[in-house]
Image (cartoon, rainbow over all chains, first blue to last red; front, side, top):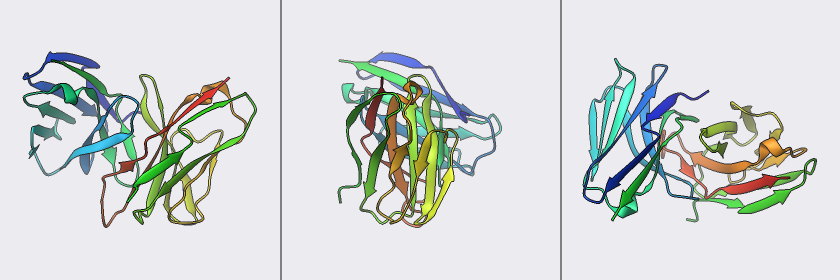
Length: 108
Length: 114
C-alpha cells in the first residue's frame, strides 16, 4: 500500500515561479526522501530529511517535515523549464515506499 | 562507474511467455530491489535483496521470481507473463554504509504483455 500521498497530483507554473508539493504519510518514519523522475527515466534522489529535522535546504530545494502532522513539503524556488518532471516522496530504509507523485510542468 | 544498468529497455511478450529482466550494479551495493511503476500508482516493491543469497518479497511479488547469486546482479523472472504485468520495471540499489537510505535507480525496462 502507498505510504505517501503527494498533493497536488499535477502543477503547472511559469519559469521563475516557486513550486510547492506536499506529501502526507501514514506511519511513523525515520526519514523521508524526495525523488525526481524525468519522463521515461529512472528516479533520481533529491534530498533526505530525518525525523528529528524540521527543515533542510539543497540549492533551490527546501524540504520541511512535520512529524506531528505526518506531512512534508518540497519547495523548488525560481523554477526552470528543466525542473519539469514528476516528484515523489518516499519513506523506508532498505526498501522504499513511494507516493503516487506530483507532475510538475514549468513553462518558459 | 556505470551505476545501475537494466536490460532490455523495451520488451513485448505474449501472454504465457516467460522472460528475465536483467539488473546489474557496479557500486558494490548490498541492497537491491525491483519496483514496478503503473500509471497513477507510483512505484511498488516487487522483491528485494539485502545481500547475495538473500531475497524477500515486497508488496506485489505474485508472478515474479528473483535470485541473488552475486552482489552485482539481481535478475527478475516473469514465469508466465500476463497482461496485468504490463508496466515499467525499475531496479535500484543502495548500501547501508555508503548510501544509507538513498537508492540509485536504473533507467527502467518497459514491458508490454499482449
